[in-house]
Length: 322
Image (cartoon, rainbow, N blue to C red; front, side):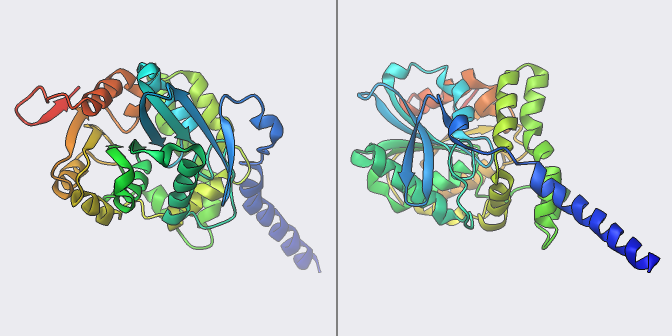
């Protein structure tokens, strides 16, 4: 009998150890209190509520911004927008589902989820009434590229920043969190530290304010955030979207690309593949890593405005380098 009691106790301890990361790590409710007083708005779309913000001049160049895998739009675009004269632009930024202040619907986070969210929000805000500049960072790169490929008449210009969609480096952690059965548990255990590592390093080096890291940590704690991010890893083809870039290559609107020469997540050498798929694309290179969107805002603004204004490249290679 003692061995049976011991077995039950040990099993209970192991079970609790298994469940605690799933229960405690993202247990902060995303309720009305958390959403109160925000500078943006909420749209009730077909799959759930989306947090978005409109800035700038309604008569300016329409810019639609789509963020990447984990850092939501309410955080990632601030440093860049702080360098732009917003009187010249009409900016729409959003939090993708499962991130920031938007809902975490219970579904598989496939490509069609983000395509529908973007389409719904453009319709809700009226940004699809005339052609607009569509900008995507990291995972947002293939999201906006697919949207542009499917809706070319809506696109005034397409700009991708360090886009995913091409082969990405494999990591041991990435392999572990994709394992069946234990992958989600491991993601809850290992994910938070890995997700914030880049921002934490920027803070340590003094290129990003600690307040941004604090907000990122808090928003990662919202209930079901890690489940949504893990579902994206499992269901969204982060490293296999080349067909959409090739579709864009057969279309005619201007295309710009901004990439960090030292990018460790979406390697710079993928820019050659993108330029092969979209020969008319113009490339602006920044001496920086994957976090250029936040830690190189001055250079980002220079790149963006060079592309938007069709400024001639300063070198014979047909590219800008900052």
